[in-house]
Structure formats: structure tokens, C-alpha cells
Image (spheres, rainbow, N blue to C red):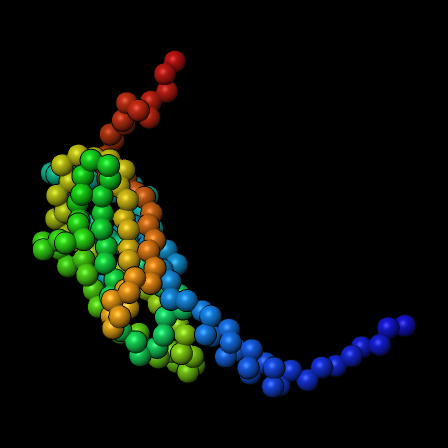
Length: 170
């Protein structure tokens, strides 16, 4: 019969937690297109379809972060483009695509927190329907060092549009 050994982790556990915390990196977990709304909702969308195609779109993105430090200020930047068009550039003066934010302390006192923000863009000029990439960048506001980048893809098109490249040839 084997004997169960007990080990006192009280000192190791506290030092282990400190070591773990020092290795946690601030990252963008993911950035996704979400339904455009003035409220805080954020239902993911894959395709923005517009009944009345006017060449402009209201689009929104959710950016989800992990490993952020409480009471620290960060900057996030968003770009939207595809191979042919740049809808929102990094140097945009038309859109507020650079946002500074300060992370609040967690209610449980944790100093490493997860957070998210929602960013709406109104009247984005979309000359051509297509598949676009949204890229989010996380920057340390003090050092200006890029901490993380992440991206995802979505489609913008008029309702009912079927592209020839997606039709099956028979």
C-alpha cells in the first residue's frame, strides 16, 4: 500500500505566484468585428451586410486584453484594410483609432487583469465590398513599446450580393 506524502507549499506557493506574475505578458487576446450599436453590447459578426449600399459603413470592433497591469495606462491603435483598400489607416485623422485607457484595479485586488473595449467607427468610406482585416496594436503608454498585435478578418457587402469568385462552377 502506498503512503500519501504531504508537502508544505506555503513558502513555495507565494514565491511561485510572484514568479508567475512577473512572466505574464500584456497581450491582445483577440480583436473581432462586432455589431454596431451605441450601447455596450458586442455580438460578433462575420459579415457586415447593408440593405442600402451607399459606400459608407458603420462598423465596430471589440478588443480583448489579457495580462494588463492595474493602474497602468495603455494605448491601442486600430487599422482596417485589405490588399486593395485602406479604410482606416494608422495615421488616420478622420477617425479616432488611437485610444488611451487606464486599467482599473480588479475588485478582488488582483493587479493582473483582463479587460475589453468597444470601438465604433461611423461613416467609414467603403468604395468596394470585400474581405477586410482589422488589426489592433497594444502599446505601453510610457515606453511607447508595442506589446502585442492581433488581427481578424470580416466581410463588408451589400445585402444579397454573391461574388463570382464564390460561385461554384458546374
